[in-house]
Amino acid sequence: MTQIPVDNEIHLPREALPAKQMEKLIQRLTVPNPEYIARKRMGKWLGGVPESIECFRFENGSIAIPRGAARLLKELTIETGTTLHYVDRRLSFPFVAYPIAISPRAYQAEAIARMTGATQGVVVMPCGGGKSLTGVGVVIRLGQPTIFLVHTLDLVEQWRDLLNGLGVQDVGIVCDGVNKPEMITLATVQTLAGRDAGDPLFRQFGCVIQDEGHHVPGYTFRDVLNRFPAKHRFALTATPDRADGLTDLLFHYVGPILHEVDFGFLVKNGFLIEPEI
Image (cartoon, rainbow, N blue to C red; front, side, top):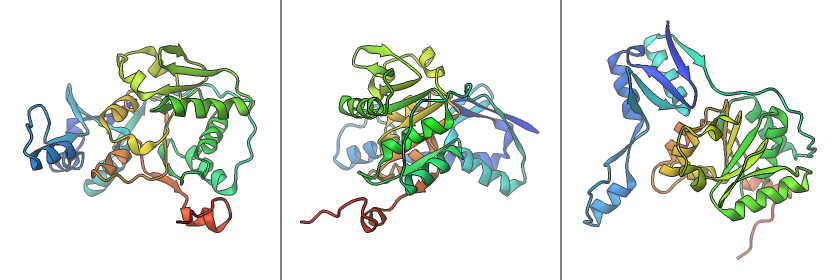
C-alpha cells in the first residue's frame, strides 16, 4: 500500500497512480493563465508570463499537490481500485479552552458545525451574514492556535475590534512592521509573502482561516496559504466565483464548499434588508 505524506501539501509518489491517472491528475491541476490570455489578446509582450498555471510541483520521486486536490485523488483511485494510505503530518495542538462566548444564529451554528466536522473547506455567506463571527465560533470549537489571513489593514482592525469586543485582549498581529503572534493572530498575506517559507511562524498554528477567500486563486494568496501545515484550513467568502476562470483554484488549495448561505434566505428571515434602487 502506497504511503502518501500530508503536511502543507500532499506528497504523491509517482508510482502511486497508473500513468494514465497521473496524467489526468496533472491535467486537472493545470489551468489556463488569464493574464497570458489577456496579454495575448491585446498583443502585449508575453515574456515571463506562463501560458498556464500549474497547481503542482515535482520533487524527488513525487509530485506535490495542494491539499484540496485530495478529492481529485479519490476520484482517480475509484477508477483504478487503487488504495492510498495517507500519513498525517499536519499540525494540531492540545485543546485550548478560549474564554469567548458567542450566540450564533442557527445558520451560523450550522456553518460552524460543518467546518469543525471537517478539516478543510470553504464557507460561503453573503456580506453582512456574519462570516467573522462564524470564524470565531470555529476557533472556540476547535481550540487550536489560529491565524486569520487578511489582505488589508482595515480588515485587521475590523477583526481586532470584533475579538476585543468578545473579550480577547491578546490578539496577535503580524503586519505593517508588527511581529507579535499570539494564540489568535491576525496577519496580512502581503507581510507573510515576504517571509521565507521555512519561517517558524508557519508552524505555530493548528488552524488557518483565510478571510475574503475568493482571493486564494491569486498567486500570492495561494502561495502563502500553502505554506501552513495546520491540520485545519478554511476560507470564508461572500462568493467563490471569479470572473477570470480561476474559481477551481480555491477548491484545489482549500477544499470543497462545506456550507453555503443564500442571500435570499437572509432577507426572507429578516437578517438582511434587500437594497432598493
